[in-house]
Every structure is written in C-alpha cells, then in structure tokens.
Length: 179
Image 1 (cartoon, one colour):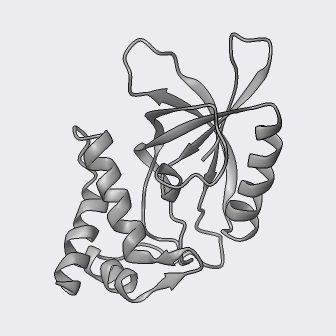
Image 2 (tube, rainbow, N blue to C red):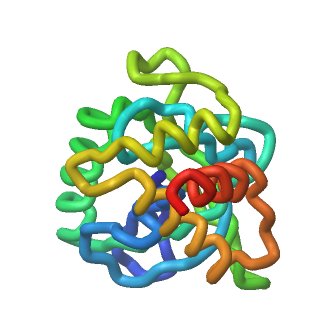
Image 3 (cartoon, helix red, strand yellow):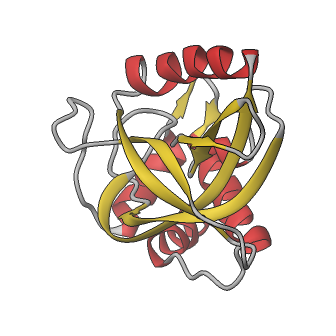
C-alpha cells in the first residue's frame, strides 16, 4: 500500500503504506516511518500468490507508512510496481492513512490492493483451510508461515490494542498444525 503527500518542506514526498510483509521488510530506502491504519479495507488471506494478501472491506487495516523523498521515490515505485502490480496482481487506489500517534494529521495514500477479479484470487475460506494452505506453501521470498507469524508479531508489538480476528485465528490454526 502506498501514500502520496506533500509535506511542509519544499520537496514532495511519497508515503508508502504496507500492511503485509512491507511492515517488517520494506526492501527500499526511506526517510522515516509511521505506524497507522487505513479505513475501508480489511486484511484477508484470500489471494493465492505466495507472498501478498489484502482485500477491501468496511473495516480498517493497520500497517506502516514509509516516507520516501527525491530519488527514493522513483526507485521505490519501480520496485513496488513490479513486486505488487506486475508479480502480485494488485491494483492501486488512493486512500487516507491515519497515523497511530495522536495529533498527527492523516495523509493521502496510494495503496496496492488485491481484488477478486485477479486470476490468483482464492476467495473466502475458514481459518483452518487458509492455515493448511499457508503451512505447506512457500514462495520466492520464503515460507508463507513466516509471513503469517511476522505479521501477527508486528500487530502484537506495534498495535497491541487492535484485535485482528482474521489474522490471529489463522495464526492459531497454523500453529496447531505445525506444533
């Protein structure tokens, strides 16, 4: 997920919002980061590729926004457009990102979202069915259970007040399968 905003400095900046592996592994240079959320979307494990997930809903999705400036903008967009749009099948949308810190204004966000018309879209399933798929699959960036566990760890460390039932129920089901 990505954000676009003009800051108070004379140089424009791009805010890149990640709600999946970007929360722990952005793989691009950035100036600063903020934990926060976007409304109108829920994180869902309904996308059938090996390392990206997300879906629109009437809730909110927590993650990290990264500010990139100057040459970082072009490099980041080139990298993310291949990673998210070309390889991942995501589409981009402009959304509002709200930082977790109080008294900080929201930012416009350019976000990559998985859609149901994507050929690798799997659709809803039970947490146990999703966990079974996750525990046996791996992609170019690693095993899918690592993705799941790191995402759950991020939520517990940086957003402890947020209860992501979908994520945590899949995590519990996956751990029950591998332990």
